[in-house]
Length: 117
Image (cartoon, rainbow, N blue to C red; front, top):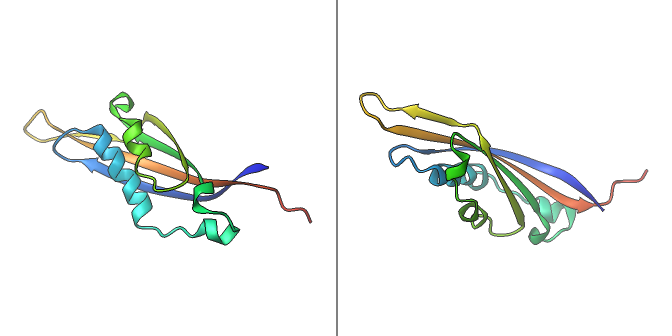
């Protein structure tokens, strides 16, 4: 069997006031997932539990993201979370506050045999 990529989704999430890097990452994942209806499992004849889900989060402080909290967002499939430096920290005018922006890329794959023709 070979891992075959079938879908890529992107999202953005923010933590405007609380400087919460995990919450920004959660919102980026939800942005990618909740505005899309993925029926690819059924299309390929797989159960939804067969989805292999690779998630990459770009955020300015990757070490402050609770990856276990992100895994719990996926109702099915096998998620693998990677957090890298990216996104943006935007200083607030007139204060020492920051608005945190996270970006998410979600790749859905299945283990499937290549087509033989």
